[in-house]
Amino acid sequence: MSNTVVIGAGPAGLTAAYELSKLGVKSTVLEADQLVGGISRTVDYKGYRFDIGGHRFFSKVPLINQLWDEMLDEDFMLRPRLSRIHYRGHFFDYPLSAKNALQGFGAIESLLVGLSYLKAKCIPNGEESNFEQWVSNRFGVRLYNIFFKTYTEKVWGIPCTEISADWAAQRIKNLSLTEALRSALIGSGGKTKDGQIITTLIDEFKYPRYGPGQMWESCERILADKGNETIRGLRAERIRHKNGRVECVYARSDSGELVEFGGEHFLSTMPLRELVNCLDPKPPGEVIRAANELRYRDYLTVVLVVNRESIFPDNWIYIHTPEVKMGRIQNYKNWSPHMVPDSSRSSLGLEYFLWEKDDEWEWPDERLIELGIKESAKLELVEPSEVEDGTVVRMKKAYPVYDQTYQDHLAVIQRYLATIENLQTIGRNGQHRYNNQDHSMLTGVYAARNIVGESYDIWGVNVEKEYHEEGELETKTGGDRLVPSRMVPSEEDESNDELIRAAFAKLDPVAMGSAVGLVGGIGLFLATSALMIAGGPNVGANLKLLGNYLPGFDASWIGAIIGGVEIGILGFVMGSVGAGLRNWSMSAYTSFVKRRAEEKLSRDILDKV
Image (cartoon, rainbow, N blue to C red):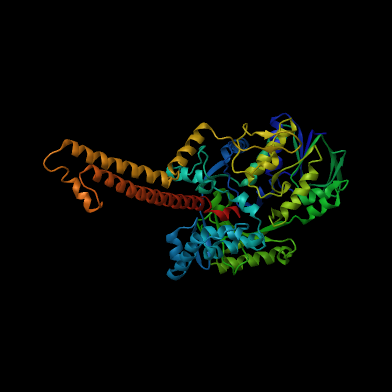
């Protein structure tokens, strides 16, 4: 009996087993499919390798980068990134560029897009509760309809107005004014204040020589060498628990045999909907109902083998053209030249986002391949005669859906699972959270460390904007579920923040007016007094000219007092108005800087969809 049973051999499950092995804890990993890696697997079809969607290996978390290097080492390649948008016969640079967009749109449409953008900046929507409002406020409604609405709704299968604000909050991090100003004033070179590279700005990334599945196949071998078994073709079917603890997992093999696995600790990457329905005894009705309300978006890839050495230079292309069902095209050869067995051929992955209940999901492979060829030809990417072969891979429950009700259902499930002390749920589907690969891995690391007595909040991964890195994460104890505390700024950070706030601090118009008026009035009185004391045949001849502008002023004691008062009043007005104008201009400038910084960080928003 292993100490720990891990359900699922995706990035989260295998990383958890890998970390447990480093900590000296034995584990057994159960995988329902015949391939490891989950959605990060690599499928081999006649020597042509392809991903289930493209997977860039890039993380801001040093620990994850370290784990990747440990697992794969010399088989990592550094690859350039290139992606574009296809819309109604035109290719648009992505991230968007003004010159390229102008060429693709034409003068009239560009003008309309520009006017829509200006309207969004001048009269933004006061509410940003859904994806549509968020994007429209930053790019304008017209550009949103062209470049974001069609693609996003292809991916998720629901209107953008129904995509929860939580999705935008997690996938598109908000900027603080301080960070925006620091970037504008000090300059970051694409990095945050702690030296981490901003993920949205990268133009190259690491990639395994033979695709992402190579990483997880390597991890599986490392685990096996250390006596930790990964068993493929075993689907968890029943999870028996008693008195707040899981006792064992029953898994059914492909041959129909039911096998029991006991352990002290259990980690699950199963979709929460399946997990809740596998529990024995069954949870209360409200928990089951909440689980059954969670939705998942399914996905299939039509792979075409094309008799052409080079088709297009991109790693992938977003298909915004509404006349085709396809959502995105991967060019696997451009991810790594080793993904194809013959350099004179190319392989394309045509991605379709569906519900399992959709008719297309049940179409035979031949019909789906025919659809893929037809749509590729319609987009003028390939000629039908060039396609030599094809295959189809389906992936159920690829994306947890963030609809308007999921959070309430998730809270009910979390509260119940917190009563089972030796069960932790990790990964994308294990938490119903649209995590990137590195975040899923981090949940696995934290779960493994919790097993040996540490206290990490798995549910806190990829929720807040910033946390301490590995070894520095602070948690509040007290209860089974821990709450991470925000990162405490260093003295240097606080000093930078104070400098920025001081540089853009508002001036007090009354104080500024009083200072200018006082200095001007006293200055004129003292200058006049000095000339009168010096005496002479024509006292203050040049200074008397001010009388043309200051009624009652001359080079006399009474005139000095009158002039001083008048200059004081004039100085007060000029100083207070100047302070007001300065405050307004600084406010406008900081708003401009913040908007530019936000747009810079959100410019590859499609990668996050």
